[in-house]
Amino acid sequence: MMIKILTVCGLGQGTSLILRMNVEQVLGEKGIQADVEHTDVSTASSMEADYIITSNELAESLVGHTAKVFLVNNYFDMDEINKAIDENIES
Amino acid sequence: MRFLEEDIVKVGVEVTSAEGAIEEAGKLLLQEGLIEESYIEAMKNAYKENGPYFVLAPYIAIPHARPEDGVNEASVSFVQLKEPIAFGHSSNDPVQLVFSLGASSSDEHLTLLKKLTLLLNDTNNINRLMKATSYEDIKYILELER
Image 1 (spheres, rainbow over the protein chains, first blue to last red):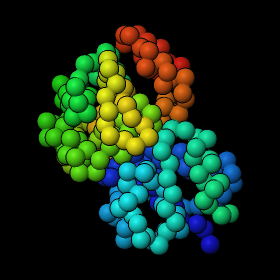
Image 2 (spheres, rainbow over the protein chains, first blue to last red):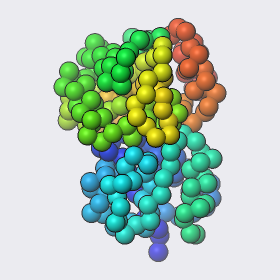
Image 3 (cartoon, helix red, strand yellow):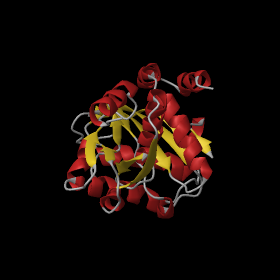
Image 4 (cartoon, rainbow over the protein chains, first blue to last red):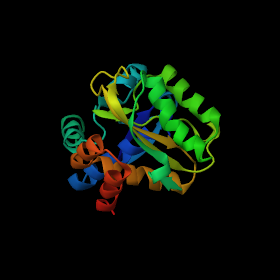
């Protein structure tokens, strides 16, 4: 089954979409098949997913979610995104 | 769709707070009729309610709100702050480069975010934006990305 990933920001409009684009690029380079969606933090709470990627500032609001939540601090640092995915996503 | 044209870019702007920085970047969009005044308030409220998560990388903030908060045209403005300002982010403070995003629900929104992401994924561009002293410097960076 395809893994499901949410990228999450406060409003689900801008920053989560930026993170999604960079996450999709990294996944593509790794050849990992995944369904990536971007959304806001309150919608994410009621969505099913295998993984949630967000910033430290929003992670607190997602405590208790069934998905594995992990952080990216610099959304434009492809090396950090790469490393975070290596460490957290089993493929 | 408007992306970092001369009339929505300002370098060396002096502000004393994060709210001030958001206002300055928003004002550029407002002056051009790309957003309504309500959108600037919404960006400041989003900061108050959700915190500084939109400080996406060291030095870089991308304040925005929702399309329904008063966006007339999908747009991105840029303000380079003269002095860095703390937004309260745990790892990316202080902020010196502020991109205000007029979020729309059209395809143009995605196009703008792609352009912005492409620009900021390159740390050379970030260094150049930090050092820019005029619009000419910014234009040069944008032309490199074409």
